[in-house]
Length: 358
Image (cartoon, rainbow, N blue to C red; front, side, top):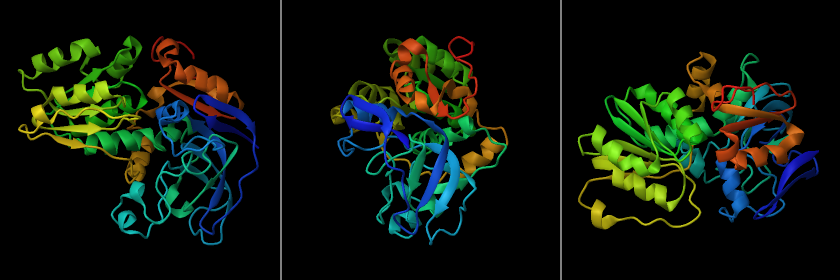
């Protein structure tokens, strides 16, 4: 089969690799219908995630059809259409019993495209299939559903829920890429008074408005805008969705006393924590890897038409165009890419930047 293989920092290739096979009785083999590229994949290619070894197939998000299962799998059956979660869980350890599947002690957690071969391939082996695969109705569009493999649960759990967004809050989201936009969309479940989007790219700030942001600002404008809108107090919740030291430090400057900073971004290096300013302000800072416990809820909302997943898809490609898709996604500031989806039967997408077919 063909797959996108990581060959070390700055190097990857769409190439022939062996077909995956069932290795454990809890495994399933899934033929991919649609996959996508995550900002985390770009971090991996930069060398920011040293756990990923050369030779690993990248990707941790997919929709597909089950073609084979191990003897211990009791739920998914061959022929079932499924969502492949970015997180796997054994279902038995302490953390899985608490719903913290990202911290699984029984061999799960973030495996796909990290410490085992991932989803950016024609077929993928999925460990702990009973816990890691979600049934997907035939009527649900794959290019929408694949966004629930990672970015929507991540934005919702690590950003909105960890940030304790409440009715009437002022929420600032720093970074209007896919994760930030998903945070803007899901923050509205809790009726905040206003959502402020911060980014460098005008096209992404426009996308943020379409997803429900009440105000937008460049990085240079953001602190003064938040101060103006809150009477100098600061935002109740600030969500970091970039993963660089400057954005994290900006978040800690914009939060009010007693407020919450929720860090979603993947950081490849240290950031300064200015405790000399924060220690007396009762600020809560939350970090986290997504657990995907919210995926069934989000799937129901998608099926009911209450989750604007398709609004994030700006480009579609055939699966064999993986390298071209990475090029487009990696130059998002130039291409206007927000989320790219790859599959064997691509659909026409509408660009949030231009309103034209992408």
